[in-house]
Image (cartoon, rainbow, N blue to C red; front, side):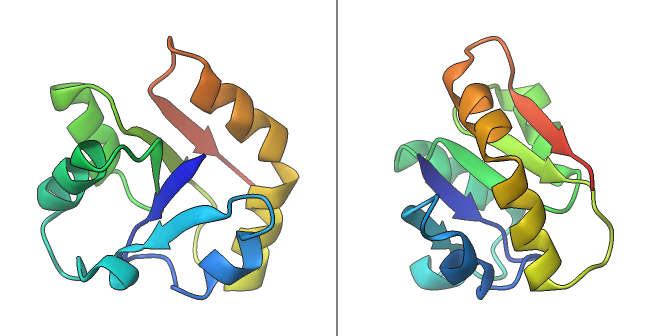
Length: 112
């Protein structure tokens, strides 16, 4: 499962979820930092990312307008540490995998 981690999430998250998501990249890794969300979305589509992992609504809105791929995993967990973010993601691993494999769902909202 190829994830692109948005710039509103620390680049340190990638290492914390690497066991479950070894094919993940942070926008910083790809020199996409500070690009508009639409450009990041287009990059993810062009480079066959399964999903964008984000903390904000912008990518949800892009999926509504442009469709998938990529899908969007929207962390609705408020301001919290990278450690807590990683725990929430890993705790929802089965849900995320099912989401990626389900062609009928475009956005997954994850709460604490």
